[in-house]
Each structure stands twice: as structure tokens, then as C-alpha cells.
Length: 105
Image: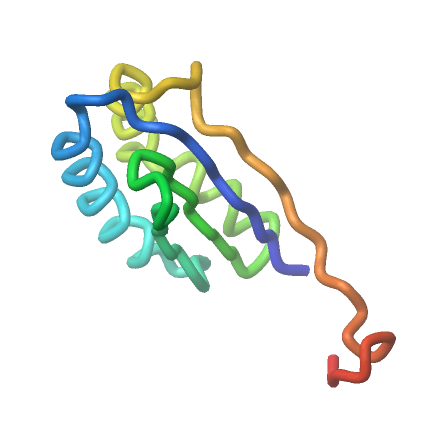
């Protein structure tokens, strides 16, 4: 079963360029992971300091491999210094049964 999540964080004023560079570099690494199916970075139109990252991994094993990647801990250590939260807020998502809503599964 796929592992899907939303990571959210707010950027401290003055850290915009640094965070954008960190996220761009991290994004390149994550998208190269064999089990990564999606890594999409967004900011809110009404608040460009609010980041939302939508992530999808093939399964739990792929997600665990992602967490174990050496560049991940480096990214998070750098990011913590520039965001308003203690760390990214993770929300794990579950798919709805599309057949209940008139779609295909």
C-alpha cells in the first residue's frame, strides 16, 4: 500500500532564499529515490512563507528507505534553523474508496 503524506512548515522572514535552495536540492535527491512516486512542493498563494510538500512512496519500505537516506537528516537539521515550527508537521493521508464516490479504484 502506498505511503502518502503532507509535510507543512512556515519559513521565518529573512530565510526565504535559503529555504528555497534547501528544498530545491532536497527535492532532486528525493525524486531520484526508487520508491518515490511524487514529491511536489507548494507554497500558499496567500502566504508564500507557508510550504506544503505532498509526498507519495510506493510502500512503507520505500518510505523507511527515504527516512534513512543520509541527505534527509542534513536537510532537516538545516531546515529547523529557518522555520517557525520545531520541525515539519507531517500529516499521513489515506485514500478514499473511489467506488463509493462514483470513480474507479
